[in-house]
Length: 488
Image 1 (tube, rainbow, N blue to C red):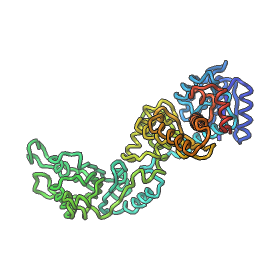
Image 2: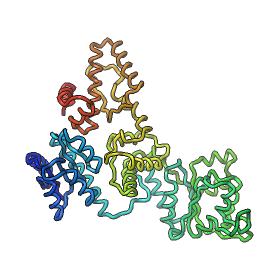
Image 3: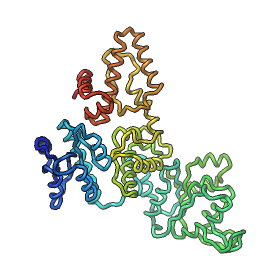
Image 4: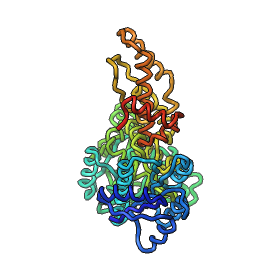
């Protein structure tokens, strides 16, 4: 592993950090100015760089910008005094991994640097492997079952029916079945039967001869011919018009078809994979889908789980989609904070993996900083989360004082709503009925504890920044942390 570089004109800061990091097992190099660090880059590279912002020998911001041009994946941690908070935020939004407010807790600084090292090593391993991103991602047992099924089905020519909600990745599974099959050298042709007008779908599937209908100026090959010796993927098969289902059944049964307006049969050397988000059994009962076609398609059924059934895969998918979006847009990959990730883990994702992918792309474009927090999420997710945060902040049961408070991931203005105030009122009524003394003092203490605890979690323990965000003084927050028993 490469060493940690510390850049600061303050010799005492360099000394303290270097000793703490060496005690933690890291190799460390120190520099008194950005100019010295840039000169050293000609012969060596750091694993992580920690730099002050304002130094006589140059600007930490300029050093950050130079490093991001030459080594965009290098984690850079900015150190700043309280008066430099705005500069630190600007640096953070420009690509800094994180920033440390001076004076800082040395142990927490080492923990932060360790996190940066871990991320740097992961990026380094990914680059050295040089592997393409897998076509399908998932560690959940339900997805492992899907992977095993793909492995068993790929070598065969059997028709497969893929079912699952919209956005679960049915076409990706169809592509995987084709890619690992004996037909991999042939074409993969996909058609969404629900997206093509009824009067054009027949021609799209089977082609037409010249003059077969008005506007048919020349003969045209349909999707079955285009997929010759390959795979034809019929998406949303449940929406296929009833009259066309008969023609599709004949192709699957006889292995041949006719173009619209044609008289010569055409042999179909095609493997058919169909998919639907609908309940085909119910559509058969409703008379909307042919039962014989259903049985012909339903030779092997492969069901894809909804994202809410594989929540353990959300973090993996988020990292993948954020990296993919960043590569497409030519920007640095953003990171999801633990608090924001918890919001995603609780969200039902009715649009499944497609919705999560779109969300990650939106965040890559819209989130202002490199670390995505709850405040950066779309309004619909924040609004959904606010009542849960408010409920966690104010317990409803009247227990004997002092009452422990559930940690709150983040406090937001949207949490102060009628539901939150009703929780406070209900807690007060229960305490009054129980005859508890000093109700106002107890509730105020619990309220302060929850808000300060949330602010400290949001700022990763940085008291000065927490005080600024809460609008209270540095001495005030220090005193309240001690009084409320929140001190480490």
